[in-house]
Length: 211
Image 1 (cartoon, rainbow, N blue to C red):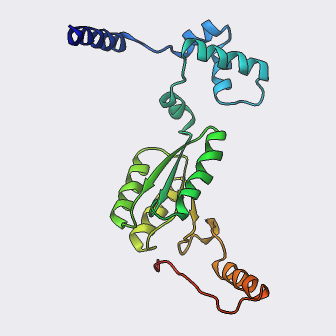
Image 2 (image 1 turned 60 degrees about the horizontal axis):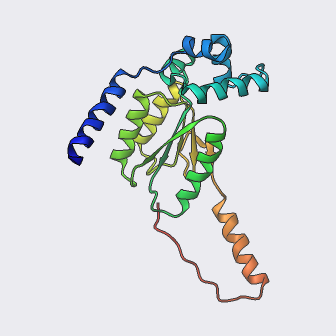
Image 3 (image 1 turned 180 degrees about the vertical axis):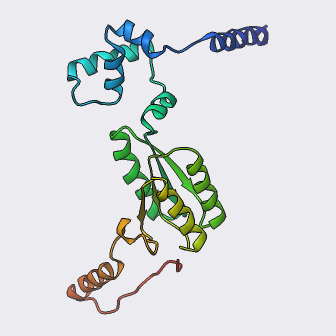
């Protein structure tokens, strides 16, 4: 009996999902008591919209379950509010902090982050570049593998099409103006000097695998 009831409820739920149609912008604007233009400007965080109006529209969106069509917005603005983050290995304890450092401020600015872990494999890296090339992203944050010609060709093609790419931790010849990384030599010097100034003389060094 319980199984029959569960089946009936499941069928009803599926039927509801099939018949449910989300509100379009015109329907929602009427319910919220504002114009379509105002709705659009609120969800694009336009600076000319008063805070009170923004709050009114967002509260109405919660009440009526309205969500703007990301596809429509992307087609109009040519932007997706999506950033691609390509990292060589999330098992490296260095990179989870990078993910957090990218994701938190991105969300605050209304961006989503797609994380791609390519396991130090040029084949996977190339695949992700192809995916990003076919599906718009507003920019790519990238830490590469080898800096070989194939990697460079994908980067050149993405930038030629207007997709900005910022490199982290590892640069690429010809793109060194867009790199964010620490000065490892200076950091090693300061760390060693600190030990020496503290009276230590037998100083060990543990190095990771060579890139």
